[in-house]
Amino acid sequence: MNKKVGIIYSTTDGQTLKICQRIAEHLKNSGFSTDIIEISAFKDSVSKYPKLIIGASIRYGKHSKKVTAFIQKHKNALDQIDVAFFSVNLVARKSDKNRFNTNPYVIKYFKQLDWTPKIIDVFAGTLDYKSYSFLDRIMIKLIMKMTDGPTSTNTPIEYTDWDRVKAFSIKISQI
Ligand SMILES: Cc1cc2nc3c(=O)[nH]c(=O)nc-3n(C[C@H](O)[C@H](O)[C@H](O)COP(=O)(O)O)c2cc1C
Image 1 (cartoon, helix red, strand yellow):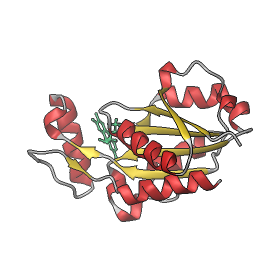
Image 2 (cartoon, helix red, strand yellow):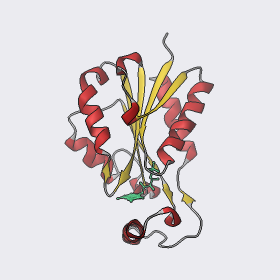
Image 3 (cartoon, helix red, strand yellow):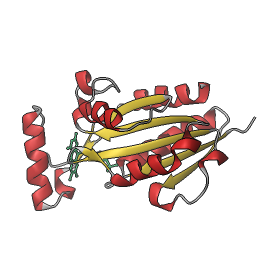
């Protein structure tokens, strides 16, 4: 059995990559080998991997266009393998918005895409006001205000639930 898993990601501030690295650790513990590849650097055929994970963060309500382009380009091949997708965003820090069928970004994304992976999940990301540009900081404050979150913090807040990431990894190892 080919126990290779491809992990493809799109990130801006690194949280999605961090989650991919954690998933890879869990999969290695279950006997899988992993390749973690930034989405723009992926030049291979997805068919090389019996299992593939796609991770992408939300920025201003959307996943990167690169992710959509990747899915559209490889759609037929993706349908022949086991694919898991996860989204990373701050709205998912709320327990009523942290599942594939309750997170507004994920619901909207898969409504517009003519493709559904075997597993879809959502993880909360990191809030780090100090790393944002002036404009981004204003916008994130607004998003947080609208969703009853902190509007100023000196240190980053990592909302990612690592137990959920582990459960996701185990699920993938079992499909
Ligand atoms: C400029 C900017 C815009 C963002 N827009 C949203 C948003 O619309 N909704 C949301 O829930 N989170 C939003 N976030 C939060 C990110 O999704 C979160 O910080 C995540 O951890 C980023 O993952 P990454 O480091 O892999 O890019 C935004 C973050 C930034 C910096």
